[in-house]
Image (cartoon, rainbow, N blue to C red):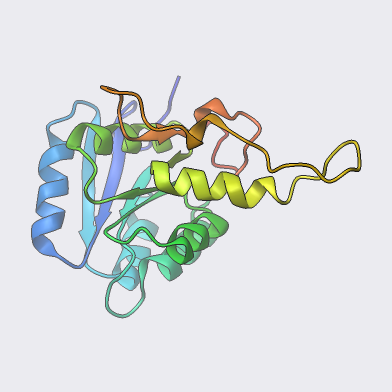
Length: 197
């Protein structure tokens, strides 16, 4: 039972990217979907922060590299001012510094721009519902990083924690993986908990 701010059950979305053609493409994909409403666009992080303050969207689809305030700093500012707004990082660059930086600041997801349209829509819906979504390559590195921080209950050193994320994707399955299967995972802004219920 969701209670999204724009239009009852609708998911309100702001698109942030410095390339107008990409924003138009994202808009076209999302506007074809029932229950998703685009409430604004911004071409840089500072404009995004101002727009979010006015529109209070459910989800912000955020680019990373933009002139002026980049997507990472914009994520920091938006989460501080609007903790219920979910940030989905959508970028060309599959780099740890961006993924981990965004997640530490409270982003709910990190996917790459080569994602299929159906997976992009699924990611938007997932973060709107309070789930965390990561590109498969980022998921593997996050698990590897956190595995080394988990103490061994026996007090003895052991092999790194293994997970099914290391296995190759099954044929015919989506390349986008949700972290909803890990209910104990909590991102910095508590994004795994349901929003606006």
